[in-house]
Amino acid sequence: MKRAALNATVLITASLLFAFLALVAVVQDFDPFLTTKQRIESIESLGGFLNSGRIEPPLRRSATVELLEDGVLIGDSSSSRDQVRAAGYGHFRCLRRFVLFSSSDGTNPLENSRQYEIRTPIILPGWIPGLLVSLSLVPILILAVSSGRTGRLIPFLLRTGRVCGFAGLFLFGLLGTARLIGVAVPTSIEALFDWKLATFTPPGETPPNVAFIGSSRTYRHIVPVVLDSIMAEKGQETRSYNFGVQGARVFEMPRILERILKADLDHYLKWIVISLERPGWDVRSANLKSARLADYHDNRAMRRAFQYYLTNQSRAMGDRARAFAKRFVPYLRGRLSFSRGSTWIRARMDPKATRYRIRRLEGQGHSRGFLSVDDDMKTAVGKSLEVLRERHARFLEGREGEQVAGPNPGPPGRTPPPAYELFAEVLQDLSSMVRDHGAVPVFLSHPINQSREDLAAADSTGVIEHFIAIDNRTDYPHLFRAELRFDQGHLNQDGAIEYTKILADRLSLIIATEESDQ
Image (cartoon, rainbow, N blue to C red; front, side):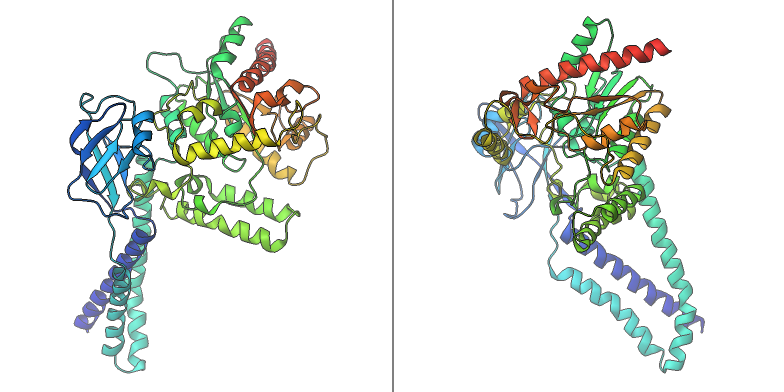
């Protein structure tokens, strides 16, 4: 009997092992995390930012390639030879035996004493997952055959249930361990935002006491240097930083704020200006595999998404159900440690799995977190440059007269719009987080804001204490002039400066009021 139990344990364990290996093989095939590195040898300078290096053994033609500088991911592999030579800053192009590349900061790789490598995923033959699944079933079939009659099979399965229970505990412990590893060594969530968190206080400089958070309408529109100079003229000492991140919307904002407050270890931040965008109706399929979506799709975000789709009557129920179901992909990735938890897996995944990657890992051209769309277009290459040019050209063709047709013709109404309760809940959540950190929350509505009705209603009902509205053509007609826009949704460099000047005047009044009350 003991021998039979031992044999059963061995067979069950073998079945679970093969099933686990099959799962790993499927994940590797769908979203590779096992990688190999090759050092770039025989580096030569070819003029400009362009350098070449040799790769041995040769690469597969279909391999996805990443360029590493001292172990840190850099670059854009879609660049041509001329683009690498002219643009530099991590752009590269990989051939089978050679790589044409540039350093992350434009220095000469022959002189900067850094090590350059390429990283590619390990490609498994397509038949391996199927073989492992088959092997996982063989022990079960052996058990069924060796157990003889059905009357003996049922008691046997009951006895081996304990083995399955222990296997379940093992898997639970494995996921828990992965989550702890992820907490200790966090995965890169979004390249540019991670860079901002790591560098917003340069060594030897005074940490910022004003932070701006929001979407690209914060990232592209608020110039910290201009704001601080105006505040200094008014006798108010500020050092501000722009934490804006492209594509940030209301469901993600609590997580963004949480990470900023966590990085502000000494509580230097005293004023946090928040600009919110309404929830996006759908999640783009290209983003479903991203670490960024998995990071903020927690239980709180999923509950709010469910509430949003349930109360939004603008779409059919079927469309709402499908849109909500798509959010389960990043939610499950995050909960099962395939993102924040399994750093040892996600840190090796293909960065092209997400469109949220940012080309400038080193913050090229930024000024305290700010980068205008104009300056972005000057250094963009490849598809990024094509998209920016197309957006700008389409705007120039479609504008009429001296003012831009926009969504904000005048002051917003005061009637709470649909799904306002959800928006108000997020506002209260953000306000509490800022106040608990010892700072003052200020909410901002910009000229291209679709959530202005929500913010105006929150201001009128006392949900938020400090509100700056720079969002309508009646009060700020010059912000809607075509020459201050890059496209329909963004101001250009001159527009950003004008907008920042108005924001500085309004923020100065709030700071003066708060300080007088203390």
